[in-house]
Image: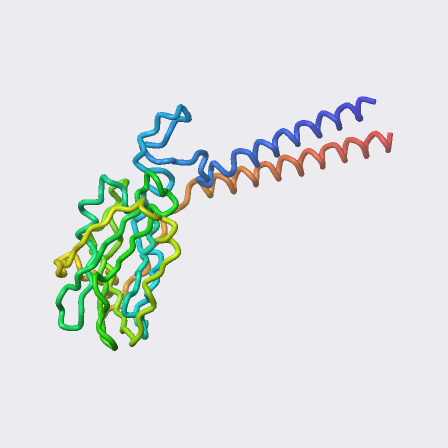
Length: 260
């Protein structure tokens, strides 16, 4: 009877010890215990700052897609170019700056007059990451053009774009009527800037930094000892030794009773 009680207690002790190992081991490895929602996240009271600085506050603004891709040919003479970004670029707080960040340049280097169309993000939040560019007149047939997005473009939360973008394309010989479904859906909920801006210092894409190695072979950097990982391994090893020793003890004790 006493042996049965001891075995039951042992089971509870082992389970408790192993549970503590599995609970505390992730913390030793540096696993996140909470999610950082940014400095200005809401508190659930409905009194958020409205800056858009949520989970992606630290992510750079970038161009996700363009209806005219770099290198396209046969582009209509009356294109509606839609640029989609990963953040809100049409809010009134950044509109004045962003209206100067888009350029359509012909093959002689001269700016082409365009209408920049920004959706009203208060009325059409679905399109708050989109900008539409329409040439004021039909483009020249079979001609090359460059569309530039400047590197000082800003998101609503003041995040800057990761780089300037340059999209070159060549027109065909046909005008298609300049139809765009998203623009039709927006209706009058838009803000329009008529511009013809030449490129600026912000219009040149930066080359990404590439680490340069000396001609000599670079020594392999010695990795520092991961104390947390080592502590976890030691903790697990102690738990394993404890379990094995306890089992051996009770097996020997039971064997002794059987012999007696």
